[in-house]
Length: 617
Image 1 (cartoon, helix red, strand yellow):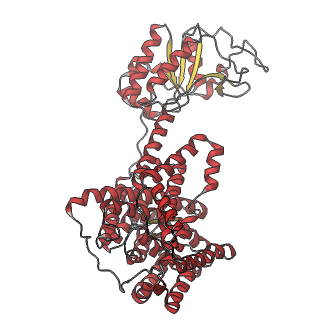
Image 2 (image 1 turned 90 degrees about the vertical axis):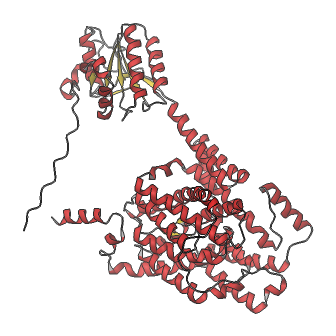
Image 3 (image 1 turned 60 degrees about the vertical axis):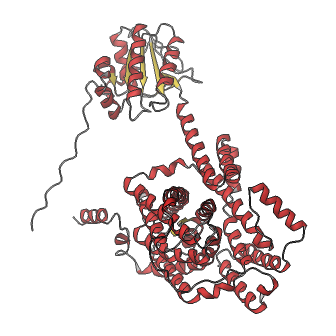
């Protein structure tokens, strides 16, 4: 009774997972969650400043998103450890969209950034309630790797001018690289800025090699503020962040022109797709390592709610962060209490410390950004794709090149189009194997390709379709079956194995009907075996069962072959070739008669029993 009550309670709170894990919180988890929360705050605050600058928005926009996203996800998220907040991929795409609207770096940038986050959130929440989380699966690992690689190169290229103290060039990637080279040739760089950048990069990259768990970004941030104040770096021409307002934002709907609403919603959908790819990957990774499960649709709702809240609070778009989630796991964080602790610390920074950040050298911020995104360039994964499968490295290359040449949004669309095209191509490639009886194995059948020892039966051609039969593959399967029949003269019966097909559409049913007609014109009978119930139901609804006959549908290949041989008077013909101890005159199919049940009259699946009424106490 307690088990049933607990299960019912979990179902009731499915949309509010915090009500499931918080009442069961164990005191022994507290230390790990507190340490993890402090680590996340130390990482998230300086990175949020950098990601806001990447997005072309004021730095406070990034700060506002940190506590809001952490609190909302802690309430709605199904992952115990995932950290949601500003991330590089979403920030880069957001900045690209702002540039398209012509508002990057202007007074309207904050409103447009918040509107994009709001649009992304609405799309994700709607997708979560509609149960379409499977859409994210269209972004394969190679495509995500290539897309992130292209984004990372764009981010680093955008930060190089701030690291060198030169004007930020505009235009395509090649034009920007050429402009940077020309600036350096003319000696336009600021020497003090270069020194600050060099020191910051050495501390960040070198420090992480010495002590990977230490919050080096926070240390560099503090040292940059101290050096800027003591040495008056701004007087030497070093660019600083500028005014950062104190206090929490006032919630409200972003103010944007009505003419841009649909474009902002479309841009928000792009942000949602990019963020979903990274967030779900991180959530699944650490759920597998931690031995728990996540709800993909609830993850969409949680990420959407976090983005909606950030948009209403004047923040930037957010997503699950792989690097910060890894930091939580390393610090022994067990629950979303770590996120709540980090949110509280971030609020303290916003309320009490934010104005101090105004003197932060922009070069320090750029160094933090470069260090944060550098590890996203997964060269080992690309080498592995090249070794394992050529198509995977091609997909990654197309995605990366698309981002660099066409920009993040169009590069994403190209990557998705390439993914869908690859899926359709692979789905349309079908193979129909000729099957033979596996010697010394009960009811085992396998392809005769490279296995001449597997006997077949004269007059009976057993074929297995190795791909699902649906509207794309229906005609190729029909043509291939007829080609196999023509290649085996004397065929009187075709036994077709449809185990790979778990559902069937009208196009496929019509193709089977056409195949039956074509075979009967050749005086060849057709038997279907290993046909799943959803397929049988469609065949009956479409009228093909009446045309085929219930006695031509069987659960197993052995039973189908046995019935076909008996009906067509082929039982006296020996199997051939007989090798490996299989006698030429043995009837291998008859040996397993008692182990198989004919599917003469497929019955619908039984309905579950009605729930028992609770007795009144």
